[in-house]
Length: 194
Image (cartoon, rainbow, N blue to C red):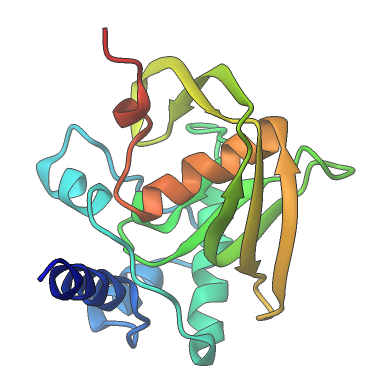
């Protein structure tokens, strides 16, 4: 019986993140402005936004590259906008429950932003590190979060190339924070409960 229940749970989870075609709503939201226009950031203080932020995000299909490139460009404008000045952003933070994030790479020369499609963490280090975090979707709160120091990650870049790499330090933290958003997890869920 336990095996059947486990298989059922696994099946349900795999359906929720399985790639589906882009919806009409998603297409309209992404195309509601030009590539150089920022998008509205979803906030935990808005109940509709909160529901979006708490949902499991769907995988992205490679066949729809143009729309995801447009989303990536608009997310970059949003995260770099003077109102925000973030180091990462996830698609749910602009109202799109898809597995796409942008992260600033402090481990690379020039600290570029990169787009990651369908990212997944393959391994975590046992070594943990505590550091103050903030979030564009929770603008009034910053607090200390403990996370693994090193992760091994697998993702596709915007061209569809599969990449697997090890990251550590602040860059690994940004990746973990943004991937949490794809799983409906906020950094406040990871705060130490006294």
